[in-house]
Length: 434
Image (cartoon, rainbow, N blue to C red; front, side, top):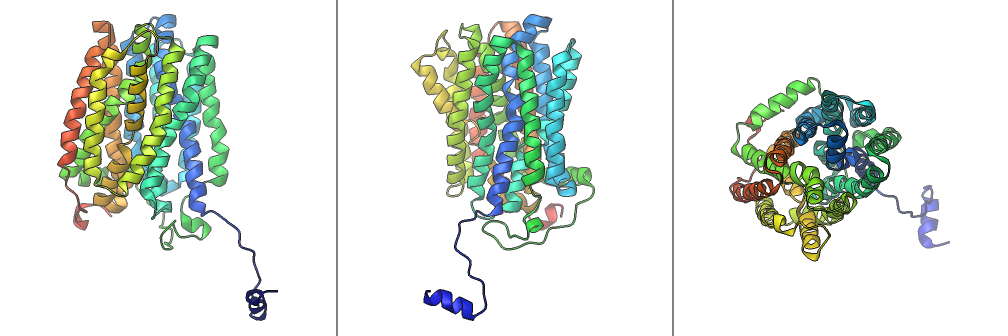
């Protein structure tokens, strides 16, 4: 028996072998990661189903794009209210209901026969469900459970959406080609439902629920449930809207959404297919974007902990704009090296904008940062919704997507300039709701 063990016995303390046990925050982060993957499964579908729905029902690409735009707009507009609802009812309840709504919308679309049903199932149900698990969900988890490593965790959770794309895009593309679009929709519904038990059993709303301090911080008592969730979300918006940085963050993030979810995620596959590329090949390229998106977003989180977030955003948007201006020249019937270079380059930049944008929200708006970021995310999705719709209209009118690529590249240049003029520093206490 060692001297240390003898001393412990003489002191009357039990001797416990040293074992590695991760902080509960990492388990919560892992469940959040899986949840976002399950909720993101639906995001793999719209770009794959534009042509099949157009062929089967005769709906114009503009009509289909409108349903996608409703989904994206509600995704964004729901986010700030979802963050407030999580404060009121808890993360587990809100997310479990949201996953069920995604499953219901995806499953109900199997029996649709009219375009208005597409608006309800894809637009309303899925939009509200995915919006409740938007990046404001990741922001809430990160803010409650982490003090140290916030930038890194934000990057990892942001990358979860890309990981879902990586998993489901090739699978859904293969199902659509081999078995039709309906089995692909059922697959997405099942993916959302499978995640629900993990959320209910392993997720916890606050570190105080298990008697812990947040990772890297000191113990904080769990606050009482916040009543008036909707009023609080609106009040935070009105307060933040009186500050210049909010509009700059919202404007740059609207362009971010327009140039990613609205443009590439929705229209890249049909655009590549217009040039003779098989749907499965185009979907695989989008999945590769997801691979490098994970790397780029996590690395961006690491950079955000170390460098000026404004300059990071300016670089990200400038590089994205250049790549979009070059894209029309890279389209071909088969996958060639220049297209692969674009996919890798674009993937690294896909949502690298999220960690620095969230860091600027947190720096300026403190305890309200998750809700403020929810409203900034709403602008992201409004931008995405406009391009999802207008991109389809442009394809109907011009017979191609080139004008959309060029316009989005120019907008990214504007976003780069806007990023550089965002003021840093916390807002005065009186300007924000408590």
